[in-house]
Image (cartoon, rainbow, N blue to C red; front, side):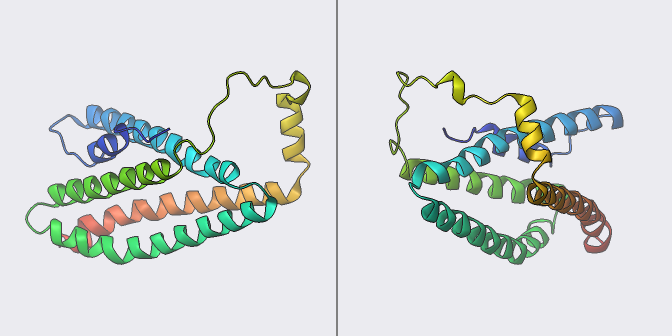
Length: 185
């Protein structure tokens, strides 16, 4: 599975300022944002699913998961070091064009990164349609919910991850103020 070209297209469209009325712009940006994130989630979940396919033991899965987190943190640091100067430089003449071009470049890099990962793991494990899952191994929705609710550590991780994401989106909202009012002058 490869990430869709819709991902960079719709992420870039979320930073496009079309001459629309306020309500139409709100609808347009909401749809573009949702489509972009749904298409990104397909690629990201396939990326995370590769860990169990590439590893054959618990030790290998732990190693790959740890490396995934380490490289994720390293990329976050590089992103934070590079994106502000890039936005500042590209927004000199026109802030809208600066946001558009920066997001366009970053989203294309993201897609090429996923394509590289999926190319390297191509044909690693082929799908076998003759394999039938045993119906006794299927789990019901109620069993899934009860297992999650009974696992305090998992509930703690879900709560912490939810609070992290809410905090990040709140900070991103403040970033709009920063770029619009502080940098633009």
